[in-house]
Length: 426
Image (cartoon, rainbow, N blue to C red; front, side):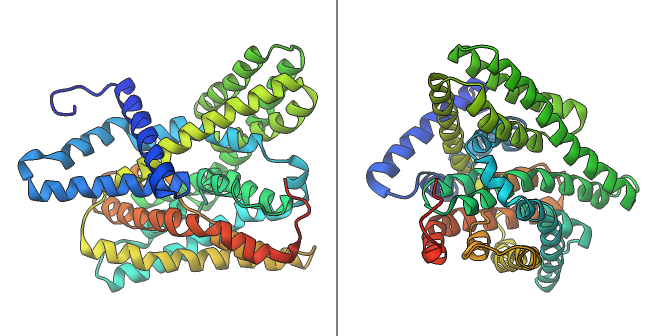
């Protein structure tokens, strides 16, 4: 309920799209920030203004109204069970598979080994800082936080990369990592959450089996539905129907992944890569290719706008306590240090096998943006004191990542890649 009005899905969607359009227009004409960053800032500013008005006029209960509205949307369900499938497919659709193959070992290491290393590093650092501030949180719950904050958000990363001209293989490395490590991160998060809650005994073998089923099962499902879609697309030449087929791949494939208990994000990334490469090259006419790219670009833009706006608005759901705010601020350097260690280690090993392109490490370090996925996972935690602590820290890290890193990663990429050459741009 909002006041005396019921909130149905259409009301919620309409309000978000209208607000995103209005704030996007103001940002474009007045503020001039990158679109996603501008929406996040203005969404957060609007939420903080409502909280401030609540303090001045308690009877208005504006913050309560906004919280009810956001709970009616259910950010976690909206992103993880809805928008994420479309965003991952749309992102993968534009990645060149040949460029990705050239960096396959880097992408594989960064989306698996780096996620696990970062989870351990962040978890240990978060545990130490929380204890120092007198915030009581077990190591198991700190590792849960490490798992949800370690994956880079493909939505944030791919949006920024569109604006920064970097060599194609470096773009493929950053984009490939962000597409696959969120699926791995969600699996690791699920395993550690079971352990932290202590409801069941989870052995190392059980955890490895769960990881293998989720990750490799998701990849196999993505290949299967992508191949079926490719066969269907190749057998006809009708762009409206072919666009509908790509939509069916996403919606049907993600729902099927959920039913089968495998990773939907991994499945969507694999299916998007297959359709975006073999499908585009071998199964589509020029008209269909143009139509499908424009359709998915529009879907991507609309959902990106709504997602970044929601990230800003979600500030009202965060526990407003000074100790948690300080903990969140101190967590930022921990997350950045863990990113440096978890990325630098695998890259150093890989450099012994083949040369690493100039600028790869700083771009991966500063381009490792956290976004909606981390907030959605934090919101999915069971109610309790642990959730307040983890959600507050998550929100502070994500806001810093989107606003500070997001606003500067393009310039950082140009600076550090620099003389790596302009060849190979996409």
